[in-house]
Image 1 (tube, helix red, strand yellow):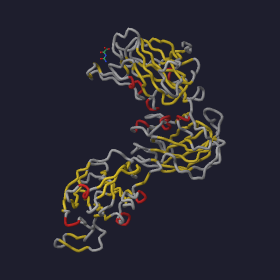
Image 2 (cartoon, rainbow, N blue to C red):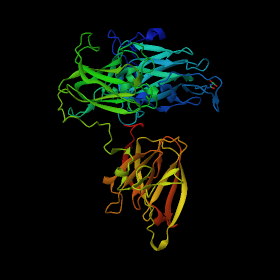
Image 3 (cartoon, rainbow, N blue to C red):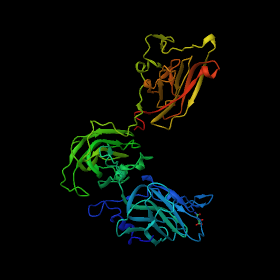
Image 4 (cartoon, helix red, strand yellow):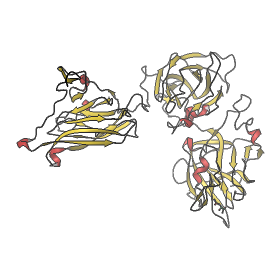
Length: 540
Ligand SMILES: NC(=O)N[C@@H](O)C(=O)O
């Protein structure tokens, strides 16, 4: 169907002041690149991407060029590149992370100099469910066939906003390479039907958009409201270093829906040396896209500290008020990964406060520091300084801390033999850590004693007592963070997770009795999944 929208091709310089990019109040909102993989957009199907995979077009990072790099199909290219001599044309169907309407496109042929796609067009389809390639799905041309010079951005603004689509089809005439495909527009918000449901009012999928940013030197303010928690610091908002006394950076968001803001979540994941010393949150009500200069701002969260690589929750003031915009300030500068503003839309029923953040998994426990007292029901901590009986030893050159742990052999008929071994443990790369199984040694205690070269952040001990059904009693599940100066001894029959070393490879000397009969030496069971967050590590 060809009812393409009239368009204007603009230069790269004009882009920064065009409606596609500018977040000044003169133009419409700064548009978001709905084709970005950062929004969850993916390639559904492509006719051919022999030289380079189509999904690379969706990478939010700019394309790069590595002329010296070759792969088995030819030159390595950063983008989509189909093979030569297509008698008709290639196409690529992408499923948008969020349905949206469009203001323009950038079909970027950077670094494709003799193998670029000479021409392209863009179509859209609205197919929230089912197969977008089914015969009854209607595809509408949004951008007609346009010429693509090599090695440059090709930016097209539409004379009017397109309809709302869930999928785009990029047609590549007849074949060749496209480095990046940007589809600038606005998310078509999908908010829960139940107005009393707690929602993240600033989330991009709910229509949240940045409308003013003081500085986004290293990463755009929009990144704060993207899905997920990103992969690294590049997925967050980050400013330049300020050198002015009393300075602070900020982002003003227009909420996806006006409402009561009840709790703020600030995620500083991967911001380990540049997280904000403090944050401040304000709200206002304005019918304008960008609040007026004299807008009245209410302080929802007074300047409050954050920290490295973590998630911080702040209950807000003025929960009775309805806001249309929120302003998050970072003092003095820096950056963080995500901002969530949990609230109730105007007209909805405000729940009992404070709320429990919906981002905290229901099956979450937090690891606590390992101490003899806290661990007593499960076994003993092997460390100096806590024994009841200490004597001088080694001609006065040492102290002997007596009987810090009970080494127990309950094997019947003397079947168990004491063994010492070493566990060389690689650190977990999964934090928060999900417990899915536990093990026990029915007849023997088991001691783990770290032997580190001081490169250890310690380890995680997850334990549970035995239940009446002879399975782990999950109500007694606890998680402890042990330092590299603490050993741990599991009492016979105490359920525990296999060793979880943190951050560095760690060797453990292990003392246990074994009979050589597997069922008597160790039992392992699957458990309901429990998420363990470890303070100071990547946490929810
Ligand atoms: N990527 C790549 O090698 N492309 C060229 O070989 C070509 O366009 O055929």
